[in-house]
Image (tube, rainbow, N blue to C red; front, side, top):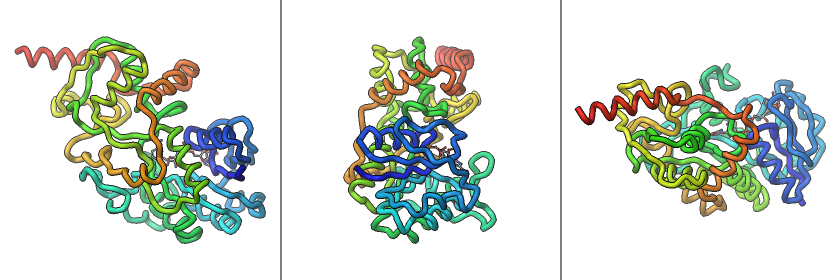
Length: 338
Ligand SMILES: NC(=O)c1ccc[n+]([C@@H]2O[C@H](COP(=O)([O-])OP(=O)(O)OC[C@H]3O[C@@H](n4cnc5c(N)ncnc54)[C@H](OP(=O)(O)O)[C@@H]3O)[C@@H](O)[C@H]2O)c1
C-alpha cells in the first residue's frame, strides 16, 4: 500500500485517479477546495485553497510515496513543490498536448515536438478562452523537473480525455448522436485521424508510473485511429448495428458555418486539415511501451453512456443541434443531386 496525494481529486481525471487508487488499496489524500465536486469515498479530504501560498503547509511534514498534480496555475505548482517535494518519492504532473507549438505535422512525439514559449512574466494561470493555458503548463513542467529531478518526475501530456464525468460536450456528443439514430452527419473523411484517452486508462497509467517510479515526459493519449473506427466503436458500445453515416466534405461544412472541435455549432473531434493534422495523429509508441494500456473504444462508450444516463443533469449539451444537422444533410443531398 502506498501513500498517494492527489492535488485535485474533486473532478474528472483527479477523481478517477483517487478512486482507482482507493480501489487498489492505497492510502489516498486529496487536497482541493471542494468547489468542483466531492472526492471519492475512502479518500482523506484536506480542504485547501492553493491561491494561498501557505495552503499546503499542513501537509508539508508528511511523507507521500507519490503526488499527482493536475494544476494549470504556475504559483500553485511552485508552492506545492516548495512545501512537499522533499518528502515525496515520485511526482506526476498532468500536463497537456496544448504545450506544443506544432499541430500541423502528423506523427510527432513528445520527444520531438517543439514547445510553446513561456507566458509573459505577469501571467500565473490561464485566462479567458484558455489563453496562456499551454504556456503555463510549459513552465510548470520545467519547475517540476528542476525541483523533483528528471528521474522521479513523470510529466504526462494528456490529449483529449474522455469517459464518465467528462464535462465537455466532445465525446458525449458522439455517444448521444449515435444513440439517437437516423442519418448521422460524419465530418470529413472516414480515414481522418482521431485520438483521445479514456480517463480510467490515464488514471491507471498515472498509478502505474507512481508505482514503478517512471520518470520522463510522455504524451498521455491512446493510439490514433480513423474517424470511421471511432464511430464504429461508439456504435458497438451502444449496441447500434449499421449506423447510417453520411460523410460530408470539410469545405462544405465550413462553408455552412459548422465549427471544429467543440462548442456551439461544432462537430466535436473534427479539426481542419491539413492545418491541424498533427493534433490527433501523434506517435505515442513511447507511452504504450512505458505502460499505458488502452481499452477498446466500445468500453469507453459503455462507461460514458451509463454515466450519461445516471446523471442527466451533469451531461454536457452543445455541438451541432439536430435541426442544424438535418438542414445541412438536406442541403448536401440536394446539391449532390442537382
Ligand atoms: N479534459 C481534457 O480533455 C484534458 C486534455 C488535456 C489535458 N488535460 C489536463 O488534465 C487534467 C484534468 O484534471 P481534472 O480532470 O482533475 O480537472 P481540472 O479541472 O484540471 O481540476 C482542477 C482540480 O484542481 C482543483 N483546484 C482548482 N483550483 C484550486 C485552488 N485554488 N485550490 C485548490 N484546488 C484547486 C479543483 O478542485 P476544486 O475546484 O474543488 O478546488 C480540481 O480538483 C488537467 O491537468 C488538465 O489540464 C485535460
